Each structure stands twice: as C-alpha cells, then as structure tokens.
Amino acid sequence: MFCEGKLDNNSEQELVWFAMSATFGRALKAKTFLESKSIECFVPMKYELLCGKTQNKVRKLVPAINNLIFVRASKSKIQSAKSEVDFLQYLTRPEKGRNVPIIVPEYQMQQFIKVCQIQNDSVTYLSPDEVDLAKGTPVKIIGSAFDGVEGLFMKVKNGRKKRVVVLIQGIIAAMLAEVEDGYIQVLEP
Image (tube, rainbow, N blue to C red; front, side, top):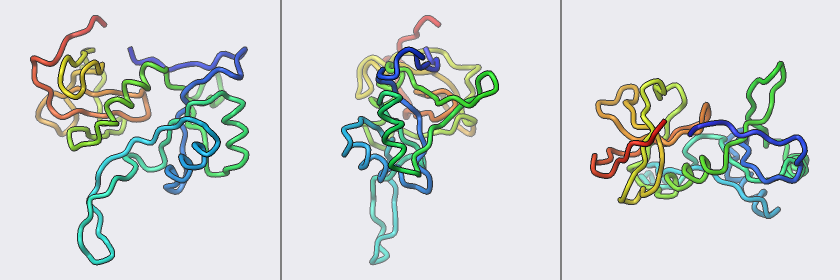
C-alpha cells in the first residue's frame, strides 16, 4: 500500500512524482516557476492565523510543511528546470551507497492530494516521527468528504484517539480528524 516508487533507468521521459525541497521557504515561488514551464506540482497547504499589518489576526493559506513541494515530471524535464532555479533540490534516500531522488507512486500521491485539497481544519500534517506505523491497519473511508481515501488507522503520539493517516513514507503524513466507525472499511494488508 505504501511503497516508494522507482524511476526506470530506461525511461528518462516517464512522468513521476519527485519529492523536492525549495529551500528558505520558497515552495510557492518554485511552484509558480514550475507551472510557468507547464510542469505539474503540488504544495500541501493549510490555514494559519497570522498577524496582519494592522496587528489584526488574519487567516491565511500557507504551505503546510516549509520547503516541501511535489513535482510530476520526467527526469530530463525536472533536471532542465533545476538548472534555472538553484533553490530547488531533490529529497533523497540512500541506496547502495548513493543518494537517489525520492519518487512517490502515482496512486499514493493522488490519495494524498485528495486529502490535502479539502483544506479545512479536519486535516493535520505530521512529520514521520509522529506516526507509529507498527500499529497501522490499512483502511478505506466510505462516504463523507474523504470518500475513497485509503490510509492507516492508528494512534498518533500525544493524541487520545485513533485517526486515519495518509502517509508518504518518510516525508509527510496528513492526519484526518476523527472519522466515524461507519465510514471506515478495513482493507486486507
């Protein structure tokens, strides 16, 4: 269910989701640049209360995780774009003594985007160390705004109740507010 994608060495033109970092809080700037090059990308967003110029608190949509951006492109196209923007970096993982770009499987990315696009207070973003994967049971939500979303049913650190978590292994997780039992279907592992 939650596996890491791999880039086929024979296919430099295959479209895949790269997990990337836009350093120094420039994820939205990177998104604008990539979209101007007709490259699909996604930045998870959340609402946050910020102080405005008049000291009034303003609810504003901001990136949920500083610097994180997902980019759907071929290896050659993203390499070309990276050459024009020095602050866009691959997120990598070690493999056989080398660091290789993290690629998110298409289905997993679509599930994550579906949850994130609801953009309300029922989604909380977590770092990988806040989620205990050993206790996760694969589930699918039936009905509600999250209909069809697959995730893991688990207890989260410092939380009292179990919730459904949609995870991109080692990068980010989106935790849904409590989902009623009638909306949850257990999946075979």
